[in-house]
Length: 359
Ligand code: NAI
Ligand code: MG
Image 1 (cartoon, rainbow, N blue to C red):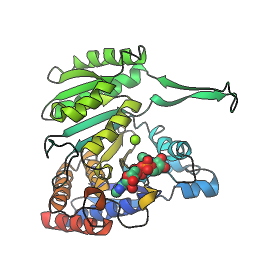
Image 2 (cartoon, rainbow, N blue to C red; image 1 turned 90 degrees about the vertical axis):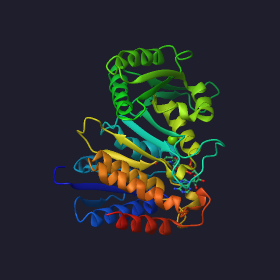
Image 3 (cartoon, rainbow, N blue to C red; image 1 turned 60 degrees about the vertical axis):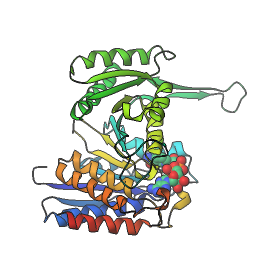
């Protein structure tokens, strides 16, 4: 908004979600204060989670989506509980927000932060700097399919992928725009158009068509299996990547691991038309194995907060926050997943302190 005041829906949800979102809110408050009120947040807490599902039989209460639509952005933790099947929690909350709010582009930046190490022997900070753009509304996760004769030996199950020219084209154009804004102006279009000869061939055709609108962007194509090898063996050759819902889901987890830890990576579920609020979340899940121990890495959520600031138009603040995160990592204030000994609280305090000093 032109007033630089933002209404943020905070939804920590399950497991370590509320821990890291709480840490993220602290950092955003510190930023707003340190800026002398140059931008302000109004946080509203939403307690939708697997606990509410177990009590009420649904994640989102009646009229809930309409309430969410009033906000400028949604700051989301993770959903998933040991005693709720994962397809129920994912479809009950996360996808139940992404799909009706038309957050059709999922954007996942990855890089090796200062002070962190890639498991790739030869990759240093700067050698791996990617943005993966994932189709977030249809494809393999369109929810089309069904099961017949359940439990019988002749049971049949279908999981139908849906690819529409409209959705592929809008996503492709958005990905090219991202590539164009980046220094290297390079995009890799990932498909599997040798084996999947309908939807994926259409992807290739749409990519070729959209590429004509961006003569300054250099495009190349990869099959998804070969792409995994290129990510590991030639990380420097990659910049922006665009792929389907399923392919990019998998590639982006690999990307996060190659950058050092799943605990540092952010993701944005964007409605590029800005008709509805977009949703920002760390890519990791609810991590029940470490819930309540105070050891969750909040860096993925801080980077997520920076992506949210950027989308809201606060570019300078976003850059500043990234610089503070890298400073803290560079100083060795790291959680256990990154080989350090600090807890969530210490990392959060260190980043808040760096923020206060940076203004
Ligand atoms: P996960 O990301 O929760 O955990 C994988 C491993 O990484 C665990 O060992 C965990 O301790 C570690 N880890 C994750 N985040 C960390 C952090 N911030 N700091 C330090 N270590 C961290 O993935 P998992 O175990 O496959 O899934 C657990 C639950 O989360 C499931 O119910 C799953 O469906 C859900 N999930 C939800 C997502 C979402 O809400 N967007 C995304 C991924 C999983
Ligand atoms: Mg995933």
